[in-house]
Length: 134
Image (cartoon, rainbow, N blue to C red):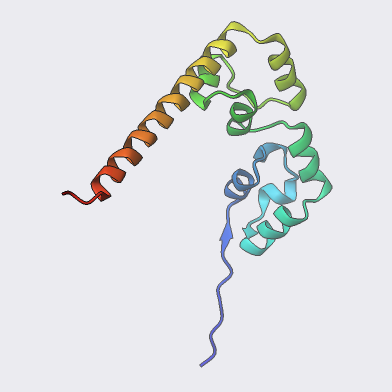
């Protein structure tokens, strides 16, 4: 009996998400095909020029825009940013620092601080639970 492995493939949207790029900005052949796990690994290991260009200059998908601005995806929406942005547009927002961006960054900082507090609290409780009772 011969064993053969099925090639795992994914939709272009999934591959674009894993690569951190905006699907509509990728080449047509990428958008219309399927991507195997092997092809995805090759794209990640040795990105072609079009992928390097997209990662460098955009347009970037919302998760990447949010990360570059230091806000949540919901924060982008509250700030009126619903479309992909280029690196140049992101840099302009960082320079201009509109009020909504300042507010969302502060909100994000509070969320991170609270998450760290909860994590420390859980670790302390776990440590106390592990101590032998005398």
